[in-house]
Image 1 (cartoon, rainbow, N blue to C red):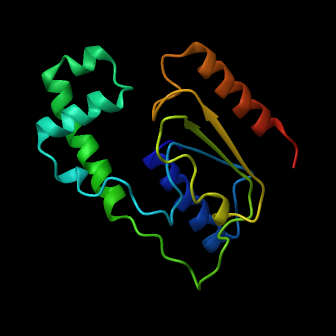
Image 2 (cartoon, one colour; image 1 turned 180 degrees about the vertical axis):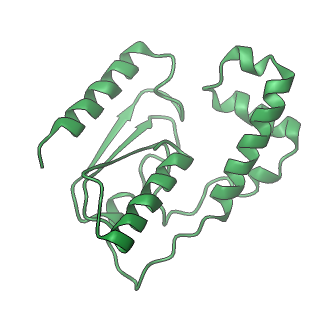
Image 3 (cartoon, helix red, strand yellow; image 1 turned 90 degrees about the horizontal axis):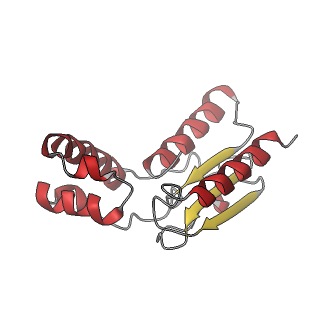
Amino acid sequence: GHSLGAGIAFEVARYLKKQYGLEPSHLLISGAAGPEVPRTSPGASQLSNEQLADKIKHWGGTPQAILDNKDIMDISVRVLRADLTLLENYRFVHDDGDMPVLSCPITYFDGSTDLRQGEGWSQVTSGAYNKHVMSGGHFYFMNNPITEKTLLDLITSTVMKKP
C-alpha cells in the first residue's frame, strides 16, 4: 500500500496474524512512516477547502485535468479530508507489548524528497527489511517512465523470490 494504504496494509497483516495465524509472504509499502512514528501533519484535516486544494496541488501526483475541474476537486478535497482525518487519529497500540508485530519481510519504497523515508518500519518485523529510495517526492512513481520501470522491476523481483 502507498501512503494511507501502507498503514491499512500493515493493520490487515497484523489482524490476520493475530486472528488466524496468517501473514503475507511479503509486505510492500510506500510513502508512509511506520505505525509508531508520530504523524507529520497534524491538523491538516482541519484546513479550509481552499487550503486543502492548495496542498493537493503542492504534493503533486494529481493530473492537471482534475486540478482544473472544480466539481472533481470538490470531491477530491472531501476524500483527502477523510483520509487525513483517519491518519491523524490513528494510534498504534501494542498487543501485549509484543514487538516486532510481524515476521514477514517488509520492502519499503519512497521518493527522495518525501519526509517519511521509511522511518519505523524495520521495527515492526523480525523478517528482512529492505528500503528503496527513488528520485522524486511523495508521488515519485508517477510521470517518470524510468522510475516506473525501476519500481515495477523491484516489485517483480521481490514477489518472485522464493522464501
